[in-house]
Length: 190
Image (cartoon, rainbow, N blue to C red; front, top):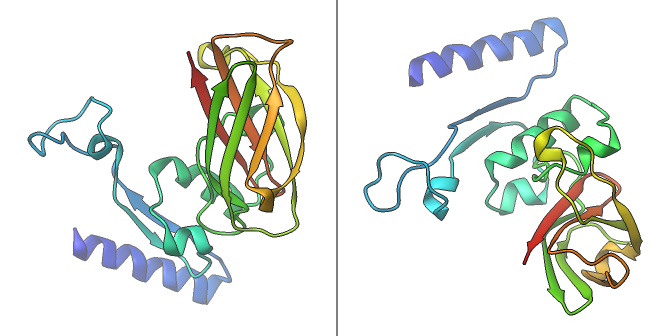
């Protein structure tokens, strides 16, 4: 395997040098292993949800350099690297944070308390305005569209935001933090 990866990397370097191309190489597994035996998978333990990722890029942001990235971070990293603009309704459904390019915030947490939702996150950017959205449905997982309600705007460095859900009661909420360079989401299930 090491030899094959070496040949692949040599070919990528040749393409970059001789054909004026810019490449990003990411290698990963599709799942971790059982916490009990180190074999199998299928559960939701931290070990089963964790994967290793080999990233070959000179563009790592602070998140990519200094934090544990996840398999869900690969798609936002690739789409950002390629300059793809996702439709808003699709971007709101992403779970990951790009580990190359710009990352404004990570670790969005949402907590319901009475008729309010409280958010917290860790900011990387400074002085950037973010928008907060929420939906009381998850039609997306069945191929449908969710209606998102605008909850307000906040400076990313505030690292917290609170809004009322009194007018839209539900036992389920998807909450989205729209930053200038990516999206974060968190779910609340009663």
